[in-house]
Image (cartoon, rainbow, N blue to C red; front, side, top):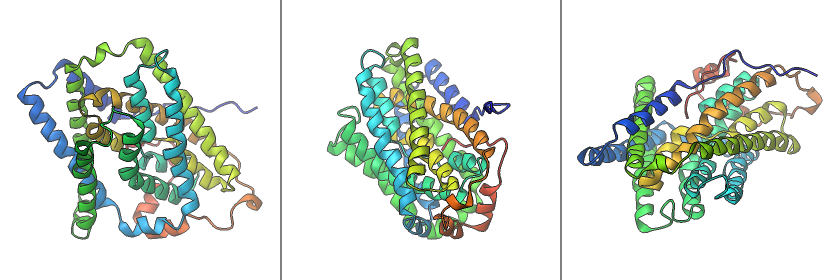
Length: 362
């Protein structure tokens, strides 16, 4: 029996450390009074800016062309927006023995967040999977999550996320959907600028999310968040999230195999179908949960780091698997056309296998 081969250094995302530092800052120096009002207004503007940039970066042509790969997309979407939420609902049976009601709401919200893009691509490349399929699946999941995540949260989270009240729906439209659509409409004029200043805008993305986290946890301090979460509860949450991740990694791998996908596509489906996007989830939580956002994002932040560490191990093991039997491989990779629609430099960049990937918090 082959012994498990673990990476020499498990990936600890520096951005997760920055997020934890922001939480610590909010615990020591929370925004109060006028400062809280100013920080809340800035966070609202930051969320709108984030979704404007998401819309401006997404190529409409690539999104429409990706619809042709419907089997792969449906498989990833089923895992992200069907199986994950069902498992999150089932975890409600652990309240109040292992989880508190607010922690379960955060866990369920985690299950509604779309998949990642960058880390799915990085791990798929490292495992010698289909990078074009990972690009298509991650992008399509993020696009679907703009609409599906708020709707599922409003339907499944009872009153925790505001329900379908006119106020919550107006916030979703004004802070999420409208900026995203505006970015799509203006992409013809802004696309070149965004491409030239990708690194600078990446820092804007991350800085905006840090502001959202600071505002959410400042409000949480005012509401006495740390009195609601004990160390045993946090330990139970980590164990539950580990089980959740293990189930989704298993279901996505063997489910894709049962559906007849080749090895390369199964790798892309496994990573895209089992991971959750921190960058998409944090801004959405601030809109959906308001003052209760601090507890809502805690499970997502923990799950994000866990998925990076576990998937790094799996990607290394997949890279050492023997090549697939040609007789079992599909006649044509269903994601090849998607790769053709991407800029050549982009495909070359993400297609290079890496022994030490550094997935971004997306």
